[in-house]
Image (cartoon, rainbow, N blue to C red; front, side, top):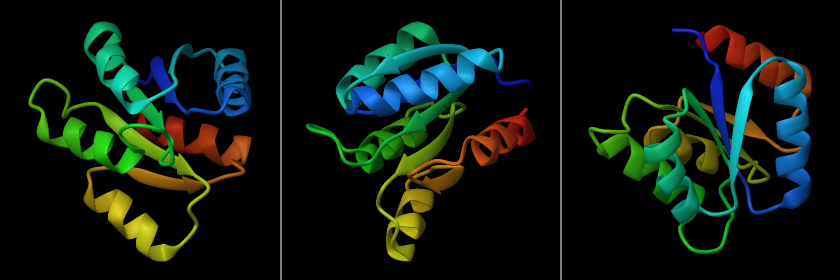
Length: 121
């Protein structure tokens, strides 16, 4: 199923703008959330095909939200790519164990991100 709707979850306005601008210019429909809690609400209302999830955020972090998505029958079909500044191998392994489909380290390479999204759809 091709990826059309993407939810960008990041507490940084700069990162949200960068990702939204890149994705919209490449034909994707984009919504954003500033926190894990807001992301969970938007997943249920917007039904995105893909979530680009930051890890370090106030409230629930990206690992916790990814785990909640993976365990919820209503949301478990949503693909999650973690996009974070946490670049340790243990973080990557932990993120994938929580249910993420991929793990990218910031600063995100726009070409790599677009290729990964295309590969999913």
